[in-house]
Image 1 (cartoon, helix red, strand yellow):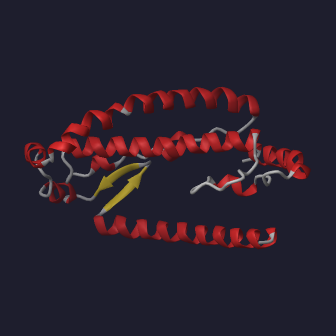
Image 2 (cartoon, rainbow, N blue to C red):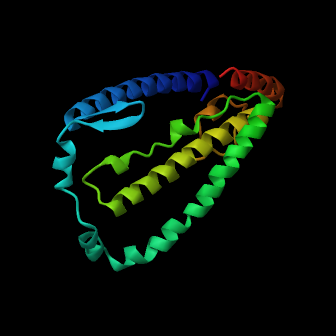
Length: 199
C-alpha cells in the first residue's frame, strides 16, 4: 500500500477519534445528569439524596466475603503484591521525568491527567470494593502515564518504527521513520525532537 494511502487512512482515523471523543464528552454529560452528579475542581459532587439511595444497594462486607469464591480469596496476596512494584515504578518514573525531560527540554507528562481515582465516592460499593477500585484505577492510570513518558522518550531518542507491528502501538509511532529508511532518519529525528519540545 502506498504511503499516501496510509496517511489518508490515518487522517481519517484521527478525525474519527476526535469525533469519538466529542461523543464520549456528550455521553458523560448525559450520564452526569442521569445519575445526578457534577465535578467541581475534579471532585465528584452528588445531588442530595443520591448517597442515601445508592447505599441501599451496598453489599455488606461480611456478606461480600462469605459469598466470595475461595480461589478468589487465595489470589488476593498475588494481586496486591503487585502494589509494591507499581509504587516503585511510579517513583522511578517521577525522578526519570524530572531529571531527563528537563535536560532534554521535553514537556513533563502530567501524572494527574492519567491517574483518576474516583470510584471510592460511590456509596453502593462497600469498603473492599472501594479499595479494589482505587487499586485498579491507580494501576491502569499509572501504566497509561508511564506509557506516555516512555513514548515521549522514544520519540526523542529512537523514532523508528519496528520491522513488525505490535498489537497496540502508541500513537506517536505513526510519525516515526520507517524501519530501514536510512535516508530520512536524521531529518525525522530533528523534526520529531522539535515537535516534542513545542508540545
